[in-house]
Structures are given as C-alpha cells and as structure tokens.
Length: 104
Image (cartoon, rainbow, N blue to C red; front, side, top):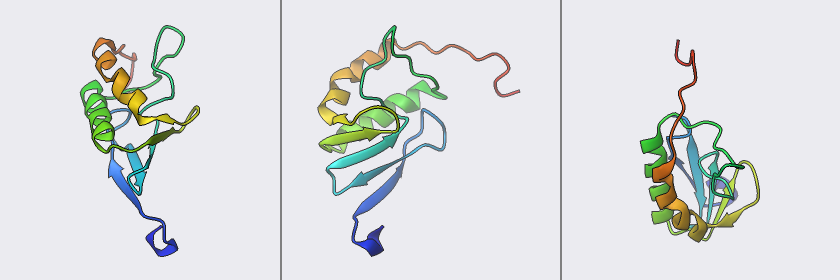
C-alpha cells in the first residue's frame, strides 16, 4: 500500500478471533473486520463469534485510543468512532455461550 502512496498500517486486533487484524489509514479511518459492527449487539443484533471476550474489549479500547473518525466493519454500514466509545461499557454485560464440541 505504501508503494501506491496509501498510508495504511495493519495491527493485530484479537478477540473476535486470535488472528484478527485491523487497518488504519492516515489516523482517520479504521477497517476493523468483524471486531465491531455499526449497531451495538442487543436481543436483535447478536455477536456471532468471540473467541476471547477480554481481548475483544482490549481491542475496542485500542480502536478508541486510535482516535480515528470513522470505522468500517466487514458487515454493515460505516460508523463514527465516537459510537464505539459510547458502547464500550456495554461490553461488560456480554456473556459468552460455549459452543459444544468447539476445540475438540
């Protein structure tokens, strides 16, 4: 990307999966993959997969600290990074359900 003149950094963003990454472009835009979505999970909007909830929370903290203006998730519409900060404390109430047979 740098050869094309696009200032893009790739950074580890574990939590959704251990090998998740995010890309940040000029400090303005984050491409976060499945690490966040444009609406906070609720009864109607569920997070499908989180391997490690603590790493997931830490990854959100890292995205918030990056101070980008916009976040582009893999699914759904882009959103303002301020929305991520607004919902950060709600992550504390997420409970993980064990998937039977996973890891065997």
